[in-house]
Image (cartoon, rainbow, N blue to C red; front, side, top):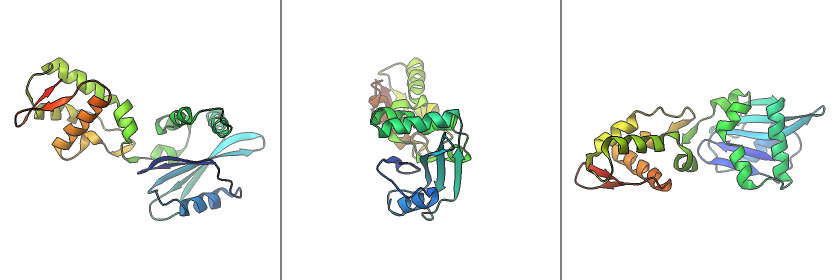
Length: 210
């Protein structure tokens, strides 16, 4: 089994992959046959001398070769290995499994430079709309300061957005788009997806938060 973390395409699971137990050759064989990829890494469970571990191989957009690799054996890695085994044996649901292998958690558990260096090109939509730490804070700040259903210049909302600290693992944040209007549209989609409220565009240059 391989799990692929790609900068542009997100996470893909290749559950029925068997291979020939040559980790690099198997990974490169898979990469050659995976058109939807750009740059990232693969994870595969391994065992050695009775120990359960994880192999990690990094690839980039210039080809299908593994350029760096780590093999890890410790407590956290063993638990991840077991989780993968439980998923293969259908003891863990796909939803639960995907929740457990998010990149933020892997950074905490795996002592791997490859994992720490990984960056998404754009923030995954599921993370942005459901768990971005900035969305609710911006909503509270704006409604506390300006109230609801009152006209305010949309430049004020842009100023609130500009205060955020970009996530370290994302190259392009939806709230950091060069076009200010696009930033507000993305913020509005996030507000509505969490059922916080919405931004209504009224007169030229003014909005209402409802």
